[in-house]
Image (cartoon, rainbow, N blue to C red; front, top):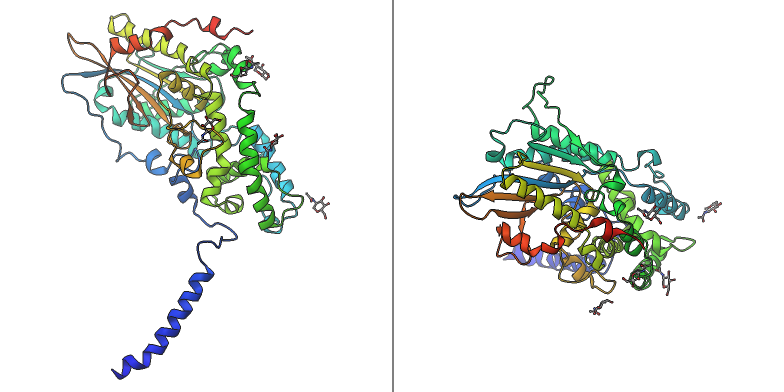
Length: 446
Ligand SMILES: *[C@@H]1O[C@H](CO)[C@@H](O)[C@H](O)[C@H]1NC(C)=O
Ligand SMILES: *[C@@H]1O[C@H](CO)[C@@H](O)[C@H](O)[C@H]1NC(C)=O
Ligand SMILES: *[C@@H]1O[C@H](CO)[C@@H](O)[C@H](O)[C@H]1NC(C)=O
Ligand SMILES: *[C@@H]1O[C@H](CO)[C@@H](O)[C@H](O)[C@H]1NC(C)=O
Ligand SMILES: *[C@@H]1O[C@H](CO)[C@@H](O)[C@H](O)[C@H]1NC(C)=O
């Protein structure tokens, strides 16, 4: 009893102290700098960098299951290249950010732009490994399918879009898939044939370069979503710029249009150097999402449902896909796998043409932060680096073949199909008008 009496005042004082501290550091008080680990940012999908647990795991890869009376006969893959260095537009904006912060005390000691222009678009070490693991995961996931396949260029086709970082990713993928199955070198490599078309003729893997109408009416059409861009700039980026200007004493005031590139600056510091200090520290979790959002809007308008023409852009892919399945099913082709590497834009256009990859809301300037957070079909969550779109073709004697679409290992239901497994004849009916499209005519301009 005596003891408890004597400690009571102490407890009282202690709790006063605790209360005082809590109010000092209440939620309204923002930290001056945001300290988070690179893995925290990657694992929460702030960037296009896939989390290591998805990219580099083999033990957790599930071997696929499918109905007993069907057999997986053909596999078509569209995959995005691995993590890369920033592109030229990003690098030049990083220089502008350096300049805007040259006299800002918090950033004074930070290293200047570490991304030389000659490194633009180069795969990072992580990017090469992601693609290699993508091949290993493919072999593991489709274990039964690959079991007795001997590599032959007519049976297993590899194709790449015409750019070095895509081609290198395709190469790394073949090494993963065929690891230890060939006759070459200490690692028993199998030299594979990877074919490609010049970019302007490739109506599938670089569709956006092959279609002049799209270039002029969608990509270079600065009128049709400027209203959205201006609105977001004025309503969201400008107040955020003002806030950062005050907080970090930036003079002259920060240009709101640099904020989306500050997001990228953070992204590439994490992706290339695994560092989340410097630029990442200036933006909170929510602010990173706000700073990223102009890119989500751009992708929506230029490469997805934001423009109706994009719903046709994947038609050359669908046409060649249907033809190669038909050729196989009718016994006119030996090809069992068609494995293609490309960029994010064509993948977005093709999923848009298929009618999937559609969010609950159009990605317009007026979404609330909560709505932005709820968007699933954005590049950081779905079409991230080394993401995969598999089309699986199943057969069963005397029955219609089945198609299953699997994006990042998650089955997607194609609108109009009855479920995960879509009857092949049904699929062809749904896309009847997009099969054998006249791409040249469709893309002529004016
Ligand atoms: C930063 O300070 C230097 C030296 O005072 C000055 O020459 C330069 O113009 C300033 N830069 C900016 C962006 O304010
Ligand atoms: C697309 O537009 C850009 C910019 O105006 C131009 O440089 C390029 O040549 C165009 N490409 C095609 C295929 O028309
Ligand atoms: C730009 O897009 C708008 C809306 O889709 C369209 O009405 C307009 O004709 C387009 N401009 C050009 C030059 O194609
Ligand atoms: C704000 O809107 C005006 C047009 O109304 C536009 O010129 C300006 O660039 C917008 N500001 C931002 C930061 O987007
Ligand atoms: C947001 O903007 C779009 C396009 O301008 C409009 O169709 C939609 O109704 C707006 N939504 C809300 C909640 O204001």
